Length: 529
Image 1 (cartoon, rainbow, N blue to C red):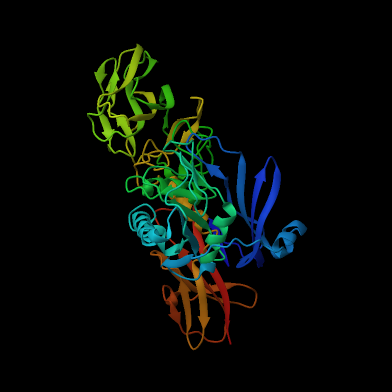
Image 2: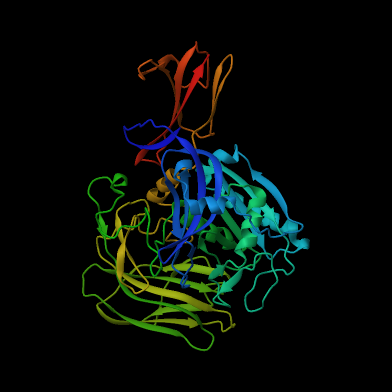
């Protein structure tokens, strides 16, 4: 029996067999896509995922929610039963292959992550696996998801495509039909043949918690939501995947300005934020002013980008910009000018998608002009977006400060608040870390799926098997006739113990500095005959 419990609260309950139900909700209408019986016990319905099916950068996607539910056997509806027993149409995927990359336990009690690739031909099979291994190392051996790795099983499925690459300006014949949207941009990559994608994913495991799709394309692009999609780009592939998995693992929307979806644990409509347990003292509310913003995707070859704004008459305010580009390989190619004076850019110059901040500067009140000029005239420099801000004197730019920092929507209106200024990779694409709020939320969502206890084996000695996490505290309890439980304190911390006949309870608690909101406790009752 597993529970994520409020601090100081442990609740025992009778549990039942359950089903994993996957469904979409469109305009209030529910469509059940699949129902699967699983070896997971719950006493009531548990919502595992409730996320926009597609979350793309400045690409209008249909307002469809994707949901996954754990439902007890006695609550399955007639419609869900019909889907459970229906015959599924099979998609043939010749020459497909599955490789196990990370195995930490049974799929039934692990987060199952399955990676598939699109646009890799038969001759490019090893290229695909090299790309997969590189990205898994980037994500799980480095800081971003390293602490979560003991909860994961990771598989890669290779399915060959007839053409190399994905559909953009030229249509390609690929296994899953990925395509760029809009055409010719370095932005969204949309799923094509979802039935084929689901078939490939299920070749690895009947239980797929998080699907990843890698496009055989050397430049930036991706999608969040039901599927985390990225490209093989050496510069941006892992960067995009971190961000998209942040959506999927944490079930949250964006933290950057100008997005389409703001929701979840990292968003609050008011400054009375729900993450106060991460704040020492009073909540600091920090409101930047959004001066101007343009999501233009402008080719700078034939003309400059020009915009103007009015800076507030407020002592102590400083000015800064956030920009993104394609094709800017060095600081001499493109100049960003404020009233004719060049601004210093802080970021990494690449031919791929790049992200920059300008160094903060003081500015007088009144009208000002921004100009972005292609100095090299090499024909490939594009400005993706340029946002300008005014920051008040008391604004806290420190990376580890948690407070209430305002966020602006696609209409440049204040939409609500995020937890940190620019620390989190859900706002800052170049970051490799989450803010504490997102990091904690990912843990809590994972523990809806994974139990700390794998098994309690009763033989001559009793042995408890757990997930391989640091910070586990093990306790053993003798259960009395009236249901009372007495801890056997001399056995605390031991994984293997000798017990006389009787009824017992094994308890495991996970302690980490990354969780403050709730205790994480798992218990299993057993008997020694």
